[in-house]
Image 1 (cartoon, rainbow, N blue to C red):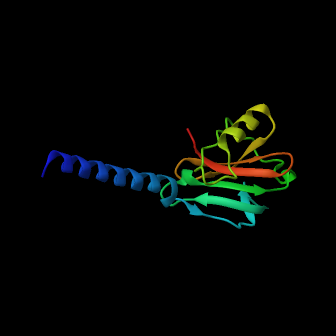
Image 2 (image 1 turned 60 degrees about the vertical axis):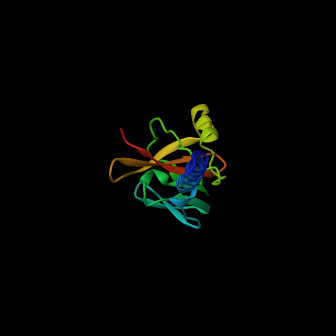
Amino acid sequence: MSGRTLMIALLAFAALFGAALWYAQVYAWYERDDGRTSVLVGENDTPVSDYRGLAGDSSPLKLRGCFTIDPAALEGAPEAADPAPLVAPKWFDCYDAAALGADLEAGRARAVEAGREPQGFRRIVAVYPDGRAFQWREVVE
């Protein structure tokens, strides 16, 4: 086998492996979770509409959700300390972590701790005054 053939084979293998790894990270381990009618906030099943979500069995941190909620339904829920929205895959276009984080810092949205989850995670729900809402999980430190 000549050096040129070996180099082409190695480059082809690296390209295929890289494409498979990219696909696994961006698409394969996420599951769509659309159409929910409620979200658990504390002990209350809170009605929502237009729910679009992501989840994944490989990590609790894959939870993302976009929905509409009555902001008054979150009154009395504990404020989340230092909420930091996690980035979602680019194809999940309803969830913009950078814009949401900026709005939380500027006070245009508020975040509540929706609940503590097993294995050291907490679920955060952020809501705007117009009812747009988003959820994600964070590691409890």
